Amino acid sequence: MYKVLTLNQISVKGLEKLPRENYEIASEFSNPDALLLRSHKLQTENIPPSILAIARAGAGYNNIPVSACTERGVPVFNTPGANANAVKELIISALCLGSRGILQGIDYVNSLADMDDAAEMSKLLEKEKKRFKGNELAGKTLGIVGLGAIGSMVADTALSLGMNVAGYDPALSVDAAWRLSSEIEKVDNINSLVARADYITLHLPVLESTRGLINKELLGSFKADACLLNFAREEIVDSDAIADALAAGSLRAYIADFPTPRLIAQSQAFLMPHIGASTDEAEENCAVMAANQLRDFLEHGNIKNSVNFPALALERNGGVRIAISNRNVPKMLGNILSLLADEDINVLDMINKSRDDIAYNLIDVESAPSATALQKIMDIEGVINVRVLD
Image (cartoon, rainbow, N blue to C red):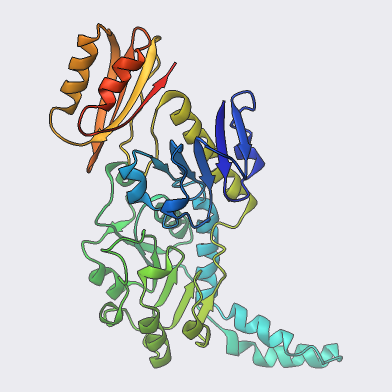
């Protein structure tokens, strides 16, 4: 029986993926096997020693001490793409807000609440509506910084709206590249992208290389009258530089999911309370994906969508499975296999992969290894943890 500790409210549809005959789920546990959370800020000292894995029902994982988990041989899973459609739809609505006087028009109409003459109101609105005239998205250029799950979906929808789409992503994977439409123009550097785009939308994780990416210097390369959208992460932009650009009129509008006190004071900053993934469907999709990944790891040792461990899966071929996490150092696998041979343990199948400083092995053996054999594996210098899956 696996014990899964939930640190946030998790969608029932996700929890249903963990069958009750094998899983006990609660918000309080002693010695849980796994953590399932959303936005809970997890501190290293609050991770129980019994934890085998952590699953985040969402794409971001800044609330999890990933490095500390890696040191302990604990894979951290996230759910990239599960909330992509929800974020994409909000971005499309933000593009409309940035092109037309929609919010301003609504605010103006609401200011007429004291008028009781419908004819007079109609006449006034006809006269004043020109104040809220905007532009159509068709024919405009959308610059997308980051062409992953969300960025690629935004690109496809923008193309269907008749926009020209240019993209910049220095870390574009082969799989992501195959998903992209041939109509998307690939740009080699971000300065060239922002210099030609009427709208720029950001879809990047927070890394040392992306923190404060949109700064005063880069804003100086923006096209006059450009509109910037940020539904990725607050830290990607320098909020003070954005506020200065809005005040100077060099940036027409900033539409984002991350309010700050100074930006709220800017009339051309349209800020939302971090609602990018706040739909029933997105929460369900994230919970289902997180639960499935957690279950596959706990029961079979397979890893998919881990932010700190290599992706790895091995079909079960009978026998007993040994899952081993170790430092990524030379001769480690040879030492493990040599020890198994010395213990007369026959290997049926195996797979080994590494990622940065960590390596992970799945080894199917003919019969269950003895406690002595397992201890000998644990005693190999560089081995972090060993788990037997029968």
